[in-house]
Length: 332
Image (cartoon, rainbow, N blue to C red):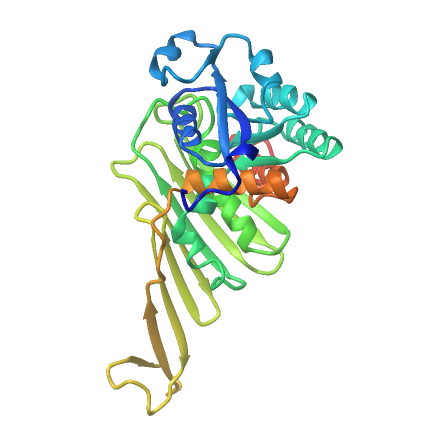
């Protein structure tokens, strides 16, 4: 039996997928291979996409019929439709996994949170980078970072341009930073430029927290090469996370000890104090991040526990993303 199997096959969760475009088709394929979920079928307003899916998967032309046959739903349609589809599923007492961003407005997100809580349903948001082995390998090492620098750069791709680059790319890093910095936000400043799209294609934001921490975010979808890197600085340590290469590096500094390894690196500051530098590359397990978030969703449903990325987490990320967008637009 697959090592990722969570349940006996008799207890597999019946699931449907709404939206089978680029990302939805990936979810559909991996769910079909899962030992935790049984795919009932899929739905998309674009009926031409039916020819792109496995013939064994039933394509529903009526989304309501698909919902009634499932225990849980994956919503992978375009962002403007998230709220309507999620609300329909929650009102029909179905657990919901919804791709990021959770919705287009904060009021919509709050309504989904309330609906899920009222009906005792699991709601998870697809901030897949939370499951990237590069960040998972150092999550426990990160302790009260004071400065964070995030770069998420992508080559131009028409797909995803229905939303700002903040909601398309930057929101991944926003979600992670909000989990790592345990403090309220003090101030936000941002600017952006529209080059190809109607909304900004490149945006930079600076977020200051009440505990003194600062996070700089840069997101671009018009770069010549892809980059997804985050650098964190904390007391006596520097941590670099490469989400694209799925690897990380940790540099720790401690007081110098004479009998330490002769080959270790030692630095001396202007006061004559010696410090010892240690380098390490935490092991990153070779996992599929989307499969990992599927497993987390399944565990949450069967155990009735909060998923790693809850609707509330999705709301928090959207709230900061919205403030950044408003700053770029000069609305606040």
